Image 1 (tube, rainbow, N blue to C red):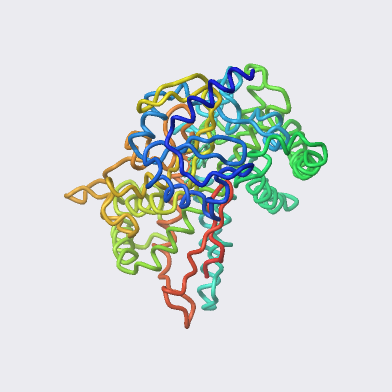
Image 2 (tube, rainbow, N blue to C red):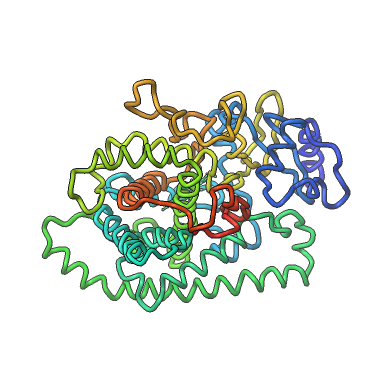
Length: 486
Ligand code: HEM
């Protein structure tokens, strides 16, 4: 009601906020092409912990310090655990019934349980070991061929195929059938552009209510949605048809490990959870969306940093090559356990290049007091994960790539965890909305990176210096490099 709105605005107006707010667009003109950097720079002067920013007509709380992030993601986790809805998520994600954009409630808890208990828990991640090894060896073989003819390789393209690992886990071994992997890639890219970024309709709800504008937005989203729909329907039908066959195979194989694809697990528990076919599609789509681009971007950033920092690359190769038994063709996951420097390099990559610079927006479910300010129900909240990773109170020379900062004094283990407890470093978020894919992601990144540096020595194409690597980034649901890495 009008009264609630006024009450809410009165509370929000007490928060620190940058001046220069304009009519209609609010602070929008202050946000550059990389919002996490613009927002950090604004926060330094206008709200180092909490800052209110008006993006179009929508007031948004921006959280920029580890202290404030802890208050929001841990102390008041439950109050901050919902997600804002938008026309686009409603269309593309079947009424936001997936695991990423579902508002907090019974359905969300159900989906989250399905995802954490049956799809992404540590044991399941273990069961995918052979599949990971196989997918990594496909990449290594491609590189061996290129190396033999001393050809320049497009690393962005090669590493993009680490997405195949997730597509395979989600949809089964035969995802390459009929060029589906290529279609996945195309659709995931389009989704990222639609769901992430600063889409106008999210910030000008008035605009979205206008018939013509909403027609245009809907048409764009519907086009993507119908392509997904077709692909997911085919996948589901295939799997239903194969179910009997699979059940038979299972009985044959007593030593069976549960490496069945997410889609099969979902279908086998559909009734138990009361999921509709649309729910299943939304959950599958959410997994493709959240699971694919992220790991590949970390790998690409890691390779960029290793090329820019040859001493780090040498040290990493030394560790990996020492710990792998002589004569082994490839690194296995058993070899990785003691590779401490490898883990430090991955952490430092996640710190400087978190694939999600800002987390997925949260929405408050009730009025809640944080740091002396009352945050009203229904407030949109962004946590600037990148700003936490760069915070000068917590990091020495934050701009420099120094994996050693994550090693303990004896070089025996890494320090500062990314499991959501050290709030200066939460690249996976923390609390009820924390990334459930953390084990899958780390397993994928570790085995791929270890093999890349074990099997090959790396340098830039002739004539290119490391200063020449273009570090320009592009912002969407995830943060991409503008130029490919050769
Ligand atoms: C390096 C790789 C990855 C990073 C850095 C990452 C990071 C994140 C972040 C920051 C969030 C949002 C947290 C929040 O809103 O507070 C998130 C959510 C999520 N991630 Fe990941 N992620 C990665 C890989 C994966 C993978 C491989 C999967 C699945 C296979 C996955 C599945 C999800 C899901 C389902 C959510 C939504 C959770 C919810 O809303 O309850 N992620 N991730």
